[in-house]
Image 1 (cartoon, rainbow, N blue to C red):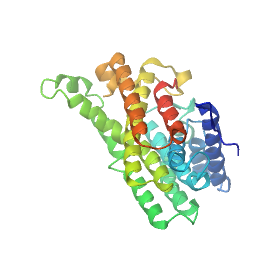
Image 2: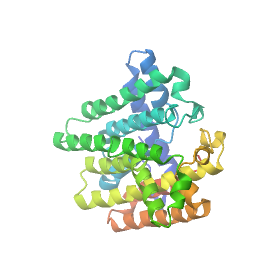
Image 3: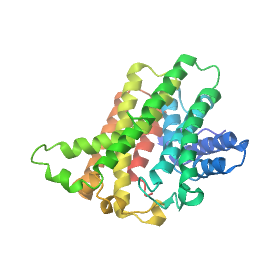
Image 4: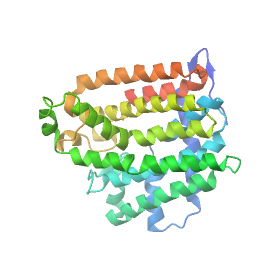
Length: 321
């Protein structure tokens, strides 16, 4: 495989992301190729193999390469990055269900439950959750230390469950419809809105992004200092990704977003945009970009190795879909 290099201090992020995304997509297709084509597997494949950013998989690979260099450790990290995409697909299937966000479109096509029904969609998400753990355990090369792999599996469970994505989703549900109530409480605690938004995003969106970055670097042999700094970087990127997503919900359309826009305001969701407005949201994104870049500068990792992470941070902030 051709490996994208830095030339004249320029990093070709378009080629880099295209190549890595194709690696993940091909490996996912391989994992799903031998499955019995019943309705459950069709539903699972519908969401996992659909077009998407593969941001979390790219972050996992990029953080691994930040430690060992571009083009290295790819075969070892691919099962992990695919498992992360399965978890993400599960979360999207469940998030779109009528009991949660009740959305008809995702990635420009009908949501899973609109094609296969609510029951099969729910079960497909459950099956993807288990398949992710199975893939990580069974497909990770045997030369990877089993204790390290066990630690990664444990952290994946934490990132996905009550302390992570599921807990964040519950917080999101708890505060949906309470935007005015939260804003009116400002006289009691000036930081309540920020703390609430951060808690929602840290779980619902940030937990899997943080895991993706931590796990890729961990699998590549990062030391404790590197892992700590990369987790801090991931926190900034995850927060920025969600704020950018909230801005797109406010300003985008179905064609560019691939999903129904305007739902945050309509359902009185608590987001940075609905609470503080678009101007302050843009300012927050600027602050998060600077913070993220500063963290990478302080990591003492070669700038060539961290170039993909820098570009992924900018992509998370400046994307249009």
